[in-house]
Length: 109
Image (tube, rainbow, N blue to C red; front, side, top):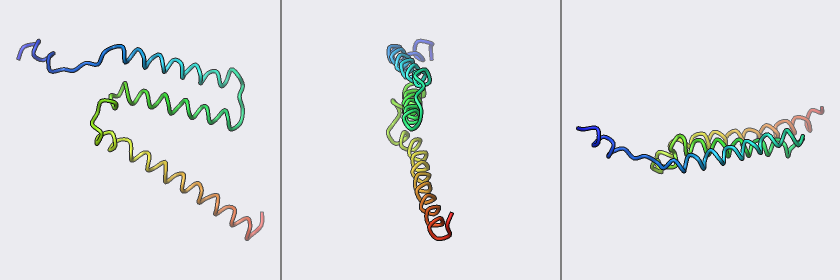
């Protein structure tokens, strides 16, 4: 097998995709820094931080880790278990609030 045959089998994504992704990551990072620069506080601050964090992580996973070009079954196998864990964590959070409120109601503060 010659060197040219090896390169013919290899599929390469256009560089434009990576440059566009870097641009989006730059804009999202600038938005993250603007949260601190504008001195936002409270729920708005933490909501924006989490939104920017998830968007940046999604872009990195999709483009640089090539998840956008994987088979759907492999994407589900990688992405669904963490989503299920997050769902169970949310359920436990609501259950813990219910337990605390019930204890306060029954036993007092």
